[in-house]
Image 1 (cartoon, helix red, strand yellow):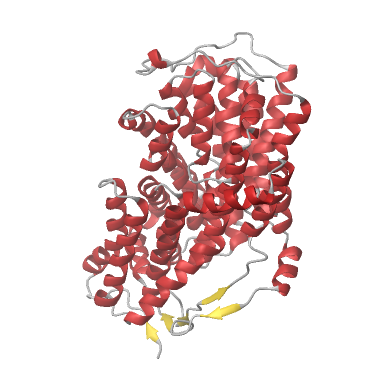
Image 2 (cartoon, rainbow, N blue to C red; image 1 turned 60 degrees about the vertical axis):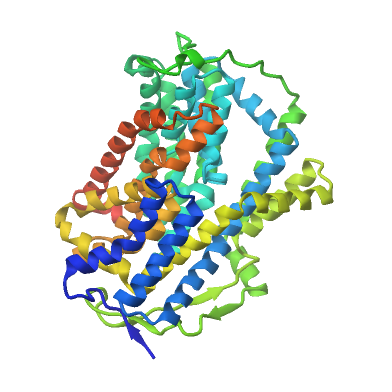
Length: 553
């Protein structure tokens, strides 16, 4: 029996909207204010979504359960499978010491603190955002900067500011892949749209980073290096996102940017070498800045071996992202499972769609073509290059699984929540409500993405929660759904620096415990200012520069 969605069950949009927001509010409050662990907060949000769907929106209980289960499966494959295997590779690199060699190879390039920030916090951080995401880049870059002698506030705060522009394509494109999969966006179109928003900020953020650290005058002293860094990241970011896909955007852009900056520094150096490791103005952690540790010179063979696993990763992910390869692997094994009791049994109705439209619910077990499988093979080959024995590889894999078990559970529950809100129609109610902001929606819709990431700590989670709302509101207002779906992700990246999880990661990596409030106060202005700039840019796209909405790939 087909169940039709109801978007105003109480015939009062205020009451219906408040009820539709309950699951999201429960999860955000639990995470952001009560400091409840992420998997428990996600579970509470899912429970609230089930109650609202059944008792407020009249969704049959078995359908609600099946929708949550369907979302959970999606959370495991492809999303959780990516996270598990990329952390597996990172663990292998840390255990055998090759990660330490990577750190030394990056740290010994220049003595100028401003240039070290560009290379490590922005370029190298972007590489780890693209490869792993989920807090990894901040942990890595803040740890390296502390090793170089930066003050704790500088190391933590600047790592957070730098980890913005790459976030939408982090963890091999996980946020945008999830946005498309959960809410029905065309993956390539929304990827291309994000690729027409973020390159401007990829150029801006390096300037902003050095200004925040050393001031305007010191920033202008190295403007050629900043320009090289930003342009060499922004251009590949645009090209890869518009013409290839989301998986390798950050990895390719970061590698190009690192190479260009290193080559540029061979022919150009600033007149004045900036050696201060503390923030300009008031740095409450200045006294804790430590002398840099001695950097060890490594042989070319050791450097090649240390970088090899990450080069293998890039190659495998690129190959796995090619449509002919995906099609071939799916022809070998990709069984489809229509979710009984859910598939084609829920119907969207006007005003959301012109005519009633049934929602499909088919889970495809595309294990061979999944990006995570390519990462797993890259990790295994990388482990063999690092001279691991097979039994050590297997042991490390299971140890990694245990390490990320709660992260995987959180992803499953988050995807269950997002999928249930889509099938129950509660996200549609929210979208209809936000559409009432009218002509200002491009700006405020962008800030919704910022709020989502600030509260959940994840661009992926924000896209799951608000991606459907953005789509519905855009359609109601005659805007491009891809524009607002992309704006949710692009605006969200600026919330990454103020979310509780990232700040805790930064304080832990710098061993600056119990100073999370100081870090938050420092980065908050930068976060809201950059988010508002993204909102203004999206508004210009919507009303002034409509040619940027054209699909050109």
